[in-house]
Amino acid sequence: MATQIQKVLQQAIITFRSDPQTFMGNMNQLSALIDQITCEDINLDISFARNVPDCDQPDVAPMTYIHIYQDGVLSMGVFVLKANKILPLHNHPDMYGLIKVLSGKIRVESYSLNTPKTRNIDSKNYHAMSSPDGVSPRNIVPAEFISSEVCDSFTKPSLLEPHNRNIHEIYTVEGPAAFLHILAPPYNSEVAANPSARRCSFYTILQKVMPEVFVLQEIESPAWYWTDYYPYTGPDVMAGLDFNTM
Image (cartoon, rainbow, N blue to C red):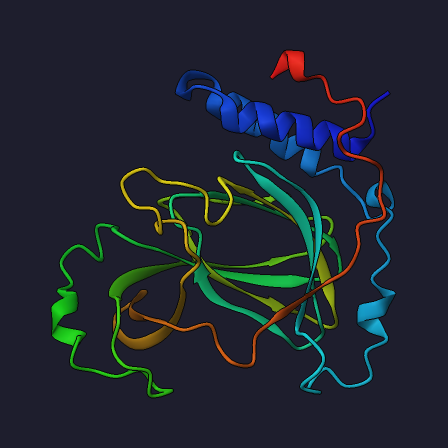
C-alpha cells in the first residue's frame, strides 16, 4: 500500500504531465492529497531548527532544504525556515508552486506581473534609479501586490501559478517553520527558446507607485540568505510508484 508521500508524488507526476483538459481536475486531486501530509508521514523532526542558539551566526543558514525527489517534470522537498528569518522576494518563472505547511507558521506575501493595474506602468521611467542596497539597475518590473496569507498546518495548500502570485516572499511567524514545496517544472529545467528562463531571480521593492502596485528591481541573491541541507529520512518515494498510470 502506498504511503501518503508516495501518493502525493504519483499524483504530482500525473498532474504536471497531464493535458490542459484534465490539468485542473488533477491539480485539485493533488492539492487534496498534499493537504493530508503531516510531519509523521515523512518522518520529519525539525528540532534541529528549534535548537539553534543564535540564528544570526554567520555559519547558520537561515534556510535548510530536505530534498525528496526531482526529475524533468517537478521537484519536491521540504524547506525549514529558522525563527525570525525570511525567504526573500523571488520568482518561479513559468512554473507552478505548491506550499503546504507541516510545522510552525509562515506568512506568504505575493505579487503578480502583467495585471490590468501594472500594464500602464512604464518601467523605463525607473531604470535610472538604483536599489536601496546599491546594486546597479537590472531588470525592473511593475508588480501588483496580491495577498499576505498566514499559513499553518491547518491551512489548505497555497498555489503559486505562472501568472498569478508568481513573485513572493515567505516569513516565519512565532518560531521556525517547515513546509512541503513542489515546483513544476524545476528550476534550471530546459526551455528551448531561453535556456536561462527558469533561473531563480531575487527582487527588491524600489517604489510604491499606486495602491497595491510596486516597482520591483531584480538583484543578486542577498548575501545574508543561503541554504544548507538535511537528509530525507522518510519513506522511499519511488517504492510502489505505478508508472503505468502516469
